[in-house]
Image 1: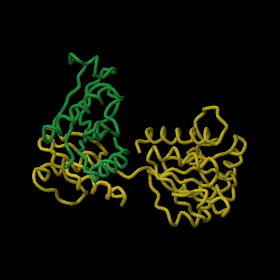
Image 2: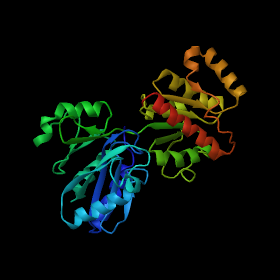
Image 3: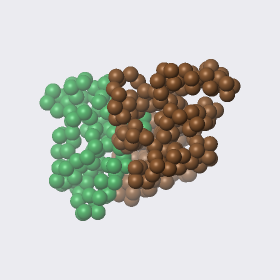
Image 4: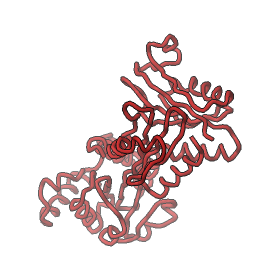
Length: 109
Length: 228
């Protein structure tokens, strides 16, 4: 599967960095079952919570944004977040479609 | 990931290069893979697997590793014959789908820069125009003038080459006549059947934007059918 939204997302990431903002990149690195978006889907998250792109159909974005903000605050390099239906909070932030996804978040330096 | 890698990705995309963006998930280090060029550090260990992933157009984590590969291949090229109203709507849809658009129209009034800003428009007859365009199995042809003088040469070219999609605007009757002309031009029935005519999937719409939507939907559908 080939992604095609990178251009828009990467250009915006570059703009935010040029504006001296802290920016994180979130990437779908693995999926199991029926996931809304394919592997390689990307999203950028600014320290102020602004974001562009997506890693699911809106199911887990809020959690990903929180995780990215905390990653940047705590000056961590990267983290893998798994969203599974079996998670206790699956029905609040998980995937309604029943799939599992693994998302990799990292700060753009 | 370093911003330099993101800038390099953007540069490669604008140069229409095909490449992969590889990331070491343990520490976030990234590198650009370009076929035939060596990789450094841990990535060099997985060169063959990365190359295989790239060749099979996949995005995935290399088995038994923490290396993520995202493949970047050039988008589909859609050649539109006819700088008409439908073409303007096709451009709008294509933008969001990341298709590259080239328009051919020998008629100066139609093929003007004012009507089609930011789009490659070749103001020549199809036979001349195709000398300037590289085509392959990731190319689609959309013939929209329904003027045989213009459309037919483009259709001949597409039928003789590896286009994954060929569509021609016109009613059933227009298409029947077109098929007869192609038979006269010694094209085989199986070749002629490659043409989607009347063009587009049946949505029922008649306006230029609705026709454009039905055409672009058919191209997307054929793209997945043919694994382009």
